[in-house]
Image (cartoon, rainbow, N blue to C red; front, side, top):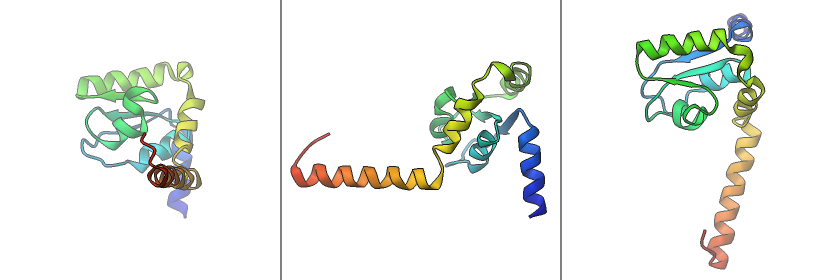
Length: 121
């Protein structure tokens, strides 16, 4: 419990969260950082944080090499107030379990209705 409070305190004081993993299927740490108001800085590649969570730069910054990472870190810190932090936080909450479950149910129901009545999407 204590470690979780320390991590939360650090996230709430941070301006960015860096996720350098090149092969990450999802990246819950990125979502947690975004929910705390951090600008996500993730590796630009075919991974979950880049493609799914920050939508190829729409909700954060991507980098491919050390030079770009340094530039991204400087940008996040220097221009933090310019970023739409509320948009970043809102994006993180799209991964809330109840919202995720409802979207999944909606997709399945839509599929079943379309299949039953012969509709094609």
